[in-house]
Image 1 (cartoon, rainbow, N blue to C red):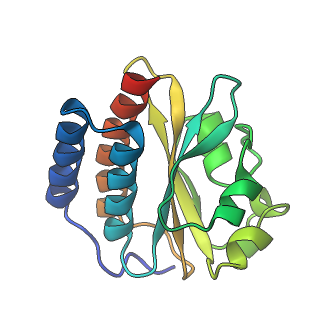
Image 2 (cartoon, rainbow, N blue to C red):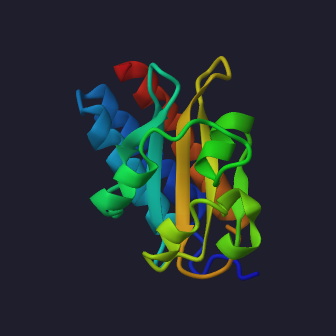
Length: 175
């Protein structure tokens, strides 16, 4: 498997996380903050990476929080997925509370029913980081899609983990 082609330093992710936190504390909306975080996750992921933040709603379903570069029809197709360790990366991360990696949609049975959706957009793999509250509750996920078969680099995982911490604050702050 390939590693990230443009690994981002943890420092850059920390700066972006601080900027998003400042935006939140200065009255920015949840969508603005989450969009800023998703955009930074895409930068961390490198060329062709697309990020999505899904938020668990009051009924326990995953809903779009910020996915600035995914088409509306894709977001509609995945809207209201339930956390499930046997489905995709975001639903699995929301169910298990741990990062879930799928370097190749065709080789992962968790994507059997859904793989046609990201593959139609040219994506080959993805991974997802759970977004957890300070007390450990799962609030959502921060997922990254790739146009190649690969896993994220350790720096990418660390950077997205920092972004997920701020996403948790934004979600909790605006719930």
